[in-house]
Image 1 (cartoon, one colour):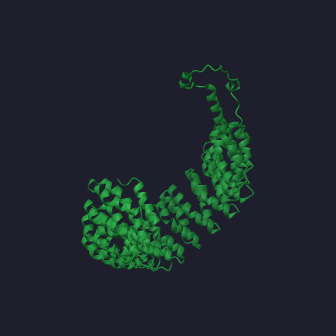
Image 2 (spheres, helix red, strand yellow):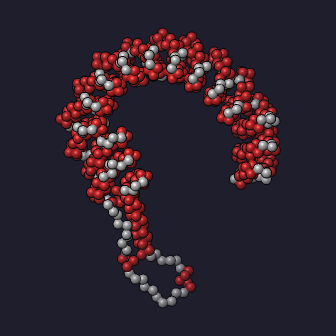
Length: 632
């Protein structure tokens, strides 16, 4: 498969140019050059030649020994197909690609996806069927990710094939895959039935139902798993009578399969069936299947049911849930396997929304209290995410009695994820019980967590301080928590110090600039003379971050003088951070007419001094600020 890259010369190119003897005047040189048709044709011919040459390179890359070149070429298959034209694409490119099926898996994944993008380069929809042959072969390879892409492309194509081509070309393909010798082809076939079923007449649909049933009863567990995954989408295409007949029978068989890897997928299928059935049909046909799966001897099956519990309950309907679903859920919360308890704990809030409030209080909350001390740390972490949502459902008094002790116990849990999850739910807890009760219980825990060995825990506390500040009020906050906020500026971890500076800015936005001038700025200025250079550097970060939220007089009287004073610090890191700070603050100064004169009177002289500093880094940052046009 080659592309001719030699452009044919135009007629203008083959005609010898005619010239006149030296009769050119000076005025001739001053005239505009006339349009030369031969030049334009040469340019067009050159561009065409360049395009063909680029396509030829892509075709060569399809056979290149380097996998990256082959990947690049396959990603440009539409470009190649457009250059070759419909006929050569069908007769040369697709057969060539058919020979590439033995390539690397990463190449086949891209090939399976790109083949579906060639439909408009084949000469109309009547020629789309030519893509089926290479995709059929790719759908039978060993690698699951490759097969998945091929199945996706085949599903896309069956939706645009002409009706007669579906029966003439696609159905034979589906039959070959369904009866393939290797399980790989049969697993791929399972994913094609739903899209094919709606494109064929009733007599063929009956045949497809029988063929799909054979996959459900296949000897290979992998094929049965694939059929179980595809069942939920397949049954959506069935009529009510076919759903109650063959569809329900297939679900029952999968739910009783000898392999737990197949049975657990039946739990997902319950959701699809429950949405399609009436409440009466759910109670009669699906409820026995649900109970059997919920009590399955395999913890993996129980885990899947617990993970899908809310979705299954919603599909079954309110009346069935109230009567039959609470006992199995409580069993999951007390399951011998930690993974099952974790899955159930993560669904507590969702399930509590589906049952009566009294049932949630009487049955769920005692289990929550027991689950706080669960030996499985992941179960405790999952529960910590749900406590806040549960508080909003049960109300204030049950929250105070059951959930607040749980909340405080989780704040001191050994597992960091538990503490992080509970801290992130402070806002919901506040809505449930009010800030006064929350603060009484929370302040001791906050002080304890602020000294936690895990810096991420300290970071999480800092991020929620502004939220607490809004609830506590300025006076209460200043008395109880401001010292803690200032202490974070001296933390050993940079991320904590950085977060502490942002926290001060957010507190300034909450309580106002006047409060910050009185409560925060004096404390920060004192740190400028601290013996630890890291603390002095934090002063620069804090004032730079807060400058945006402060009025002009505070910036003039407190912020800039403190930052500029540190430009004489003996530590180079301090000095070049002063330069970076001024570079950041100058645009803010320009935005305020009252602060504009501070640029020339304070910022520019400092930067000029630093631009001649003995340290190279200091000179660099100072010069950058000056050269960037920040300074007038």
